[in-house]
Length: 178
Image 1 (cartoon, rainbow, N blue to C red):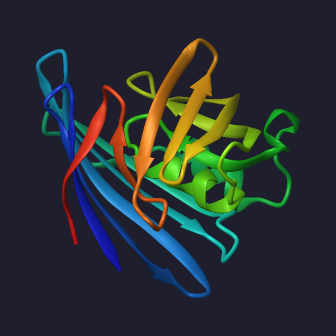
Image 2 (cartoon, one colour; image 1 turned 45 degrees about the horizontal axis):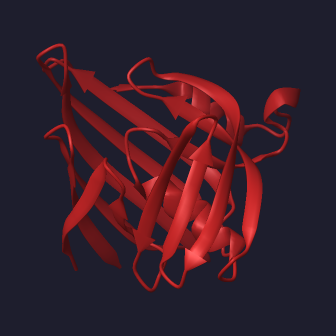
């Protein structure tokens, strides 16, 4: 089991736990942030198989002190046997409110230094909380550094020896890891 506490550039924070779950892994976290001066709590659980392929996703949100409510859209993509055609090639989920889900393709792809891969993901957009399929590119630029790109956005990501994000350029940085 590994846990990390991230600090966001907007003042938010997150605690994430990565632990064994059957033959695969489970990433679970709680993000505390704000929008329009309202406190927001986001919780998530993502389970992957031994090859780091996403097998289940759950996301819950509470805005301004309301009760946590589940966002079923992502979970439904992984719960059924048939996905809508636009999500058919989405192996990974990307929750835009956490750096944790960048670990999924980094672990799954196993890129060598200098290698690049383009993937399709189911992307949960924050703060709108809508889901859409998008293409992303991961390039391994050094032993523990990746360049992430989606549309016009690019950022460098620094990871530990296990692919867990330590620094997400301009957005998140780890302040404690155990």
